[in-house]
Image (cartoon, rainbow, N blue to C red; front, side, top):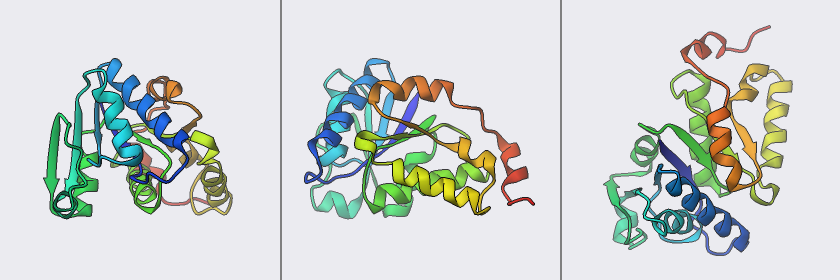
Length: 193
């Protein structure tokens, strides 16, 4: 599988986030999966790439040119694709992926995650979306999304669009066990009575 990983570039967050990212990258690569991510060399971004590369995995980075100009790119990737802007980066990361894994992160990670959820809700992106909930990072977001559903901005079925796991070891089994999602999701994209 080609697995898209959304993650942060901060080196200042708790080291547990980088440790989980490294372990995730290693596990994905050991199972023969390709990691595609934002192309950075620092924080969880660098850690997920380093984890996969440490066991000979294939890692594709997608990096906007302005970030490459600032030398933010990881130098050891299997492939580094340069794109014009953040919008193209998001599109390239998601296109062709068989699953999304969102690690804890800031506004960029959350934007990417919400775009994937939105596209899944509309029946455009049909693959699993997994939240790696290191240190219970995504618990408040999961509760908030429950509130969005309770307030009827989304349908109860939409809660099946993502799964939350506590450890990197749970990611691949959860991807494989994720409930199917197909284009018929468009039939209930609009909120019903």
